Image (cartoon, rainbow, N blue to C red):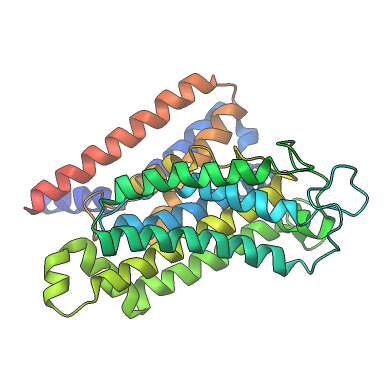
Amino acid sequence: MSQLSAKQVHGFVTQNAIYIVLVLLIAGIAIYDPNFLSITTLRDILMQSSTRAIIALGAAFVLITGGTDLSAGRVVGLTAVISASMLQTQDYPRRFFPDLPDLPLLIPILIAIGAGLLVGLINGIIVARFSVPPFIATLGMMVIVYGFNSIYFDLEPNQSQPIAGLRSDFNQLGTGYIGPSGPYSIPYIVIIAIMVAFIVWVIFNKTRLGKNMYAIGGNMQAATVSGINVAFNLMIIYAIAGALYGLGGVLEAARTGGATNNYGNMYELDAIAACVVGGVSTSGGIGTVPGVLAGVLIFGVINYGLTFIGVSPYWQLIIKGLIIVAAVAFDIRKYLAKK
């Protein structure tokens, strides 16, 4: 009986390790400083994690197919600059487009998301149609997108000046709240992230695209033999990922009140790390939306919580690195055990 119980405990810990780590992190920081367990702190962590969650969900699409996407961060920067450049107030002295009238809020947002979708689609075409390894394809696209963004950012009369003076209705998306002012008001950006997570969960679990995605990641040759149009599905998956990066870039500009061509730098590594820590297999074919969100929250708690208690940013990097290595090692052990 005790042996059975030990197996049950081991199975529970294995299946829920990510959530156990998250709870232990929060508990450890709260023991050190009980003020950490406040509604305001939780809200701040969720606000900071919302854009990262959307970007990580985009990265999860690609990782589950057995690929990777290194262009995510630069797409975030591109879409942040595009949306911010078209949503400045009329009286701002250094407008990116001096003669541009006030556009409906949705138009610049859709243009920016469309730009992200286009980059993702190009990634998908290069990977699916030309059989270029995803690492190389997206590495090249990362450099190309940054180059295009820098050229756009340097246009007259802006000349590489940080884009600021954003309209209040745009800023509200990143900093506004639903409900009366106070600790229990809910940020718009958190609601948007929850809605995106729900839509992604539906795609993963209730659609043919989701089933095909897992099949491609599990065994691409078997997926092809079973009649799945692998190339078409990969193009759609990369395009969706690009659109999610684009939405993340738009919300990041709204949250921070501005944008530069360096926005999103290294975000792709944070997104991939959050996915891996959240149980998305580096071998493809495995991953869940709750796991990805838990991975994002773990890094959110590390970034915010350790800063909250005064831990050096350099130690934070070491802790994050150790968690990533441990997660990958754990994933590889599970993969080898299955084989």
